[in-house]
Image 1 (cartoon, helix red, strand yellow):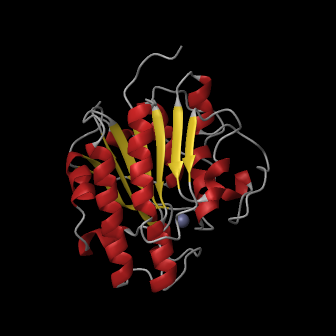
Image 2 (cartoon, rainbow, N blue to C red; image 1 turned 45 degrees about the vertical axis):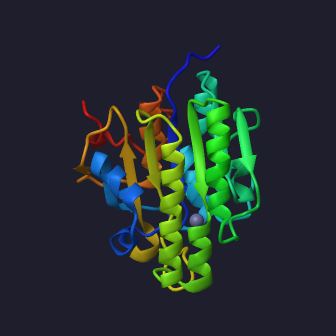
Length: 265
Ligand SMILES: [Zn+2]
């Protein structure tokens, strides 16, 4: 039986550019930046495409290592355990709530304690559904680690253009939905929120700065408050950083590093 721990929440806002934050009303993200450690110049991986990025986030290796280079999932070239698999092996209960189906493959079979999915990332109110599902799931069934994925900001980037008015309004909506989730959970949880990639015009996937630069924000009891991270941050560093928060071992094949600068001690 796993011991009762407080929740660590990992939130993805797909396709959110860090420079959007200065152009929108985002009280939730602003509050997390104020009470946490953050970089608005973190970097994605190539190709800056959703599924390759997520495989890299959870397994802490670049696409050249895991071999998933498009949004069509395939078995990893050389399999290695990801964050959820390591957490499961340590007896933690892991949950995922998302609205984009290919994300079913971010962990190995039997690693997730619960998964809530509906095909809603292409709907304007699709992240409202994610917020409601996350609140219902996480209040009814406690988890040690939860991945909550908001997919519609990316959809609006493809539909209307990155940094378009419609895109920015949808980013505000994601911020409101994140706020609703946090309001329903205990105040002393750890949370890490980031994007997978940015975008330009109506696309992403290149090595342009607009595609490769992402926001990366972490907050919680062991994290420095109001700290702007000075060193480089890669999305490969997410799993090692969450592993430290969750008191999990760093898997030897992970290539990212824990962002130690973000921690109090
Ligand atoms: Zn994406």
